[in-house]
Each structure stands twice: as structure tokens, then as C-alpha cells.
Length: 140
Image (cartoon, rainbow, N blue to C red; front, side, top):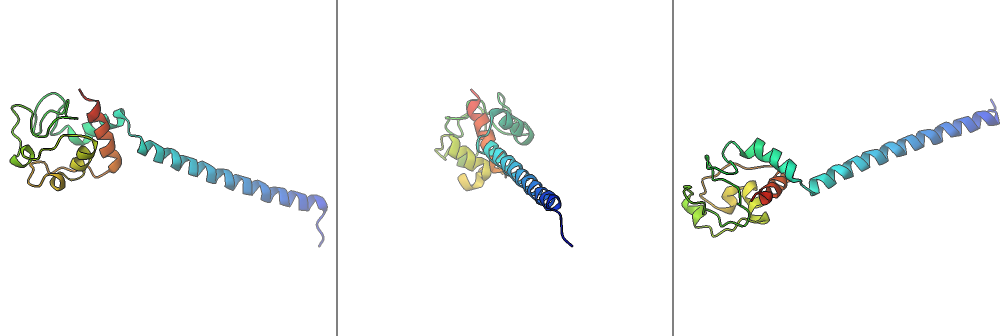
């Protein structure tokens, strides 16, 4: 059975349209992934505050001691030096000054950074750790 020229044209047009739709869906999916990855690479203070409130505020406050020391001004401070707070001997002797790298390592695994420390809580997500560090850096 022979197909008319218009039937062949419509068939090819439909295949082309399907290809365009698949292409556009693929581009959209890749763009969404790129945006999500980009957001993860640039943590925000607001996201860090949300993570802090969710994961850290049970033991830490910004301006007062709780189970853990107050964290206002932690960035750039020597570890174990908030007056009146009872730190572990290991942390007091650590000679660490809190910066991005040390805070990231601390949040990932306190025991790996300072063996015999009193803090055992870990933030498993690298994105969440980075955001918390950005937030802590913003605190004065």
C-alpha cells in the first residue's frame, strides 16, 4: 500500500515533534539538576540558620550556654575558651581556632578532629554542614 505525500509528511512531522518534546524534557531535567547542584555549592545563611535550629539548637544557643557553649562569635575564636563553660580537657588542649575547615571537620566528626571530646553529635550532610558554617560565620 502506497502512502500519500501528505501522509509521509505528517508522519515525519510527528516524529520530529516527539523528538523535540523529548529534547526539551531532557534539557529541563538537566537544568533542574544544575540549579540544585549550584544551590548546594553556595550555602546560604538562611539555610544554615534553619539547619542550626533543627540540628544544633537542642544543645547550643547563640548567646547563652546550654549543654554546649554559646556560639555567637565562634568563628575565629580559639576552641574551649568561652569563660564559665566547662569544656573537655581534650578540646581545651586542642589549640584549634575555629575557621571554615575546622568547623566543617568538627561537624562531620568531632572525635576525628579532637579525640576524647565531649561532643558526639554529627551532621551527616555535607550541604548542611556547609550551611551551618556559613551561618556560624555570620554570627558576631
